[in-house]
Length: 168
Image 1 (tube, rainbow, N blue to C red):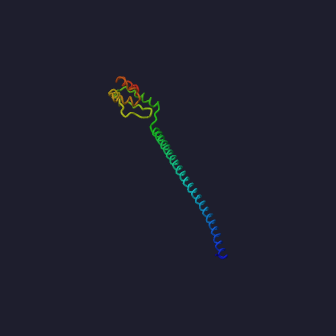
Image 2: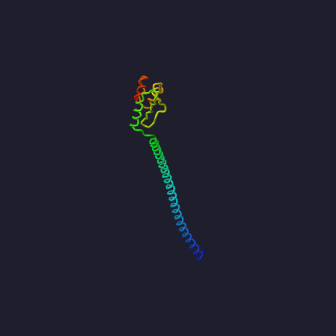
Image 3: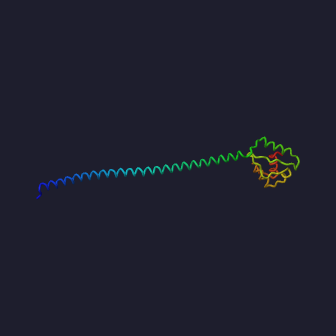
């Protein structure tokens, strides 16, 4: 049988074991709580990363839209610059060309090319009244279309329409 000293030692070891067990239980609970906190932090980091990726995609779309708008503005500006680089002719200047052609009574006197509203002149234009009279149907059609004139009717009517338009 155990002596009282042995009993005291065993009892003290048992009590220490209970205390160690309680301490180990507290440590385990603290570690579990820390693990839960770390898990929550990791979940928050993952959510933040997903939000950042979504924001980056939105920024990329905004940049893409801005680039398209910028490209459209550049194209519009280039078109305006090209329009401004073309000579601008007033109605008075065009009427002056009509009058000069009207004064041309000689069949070989030079005809002046009539300028369209956009400042363009036709590539093929009769040099004089003789060349105007010699225009074939295709040449006449091209000039009537260039000036936006009616291209229907008999050849002589189309010819007269062009002649009146250029001031003859």
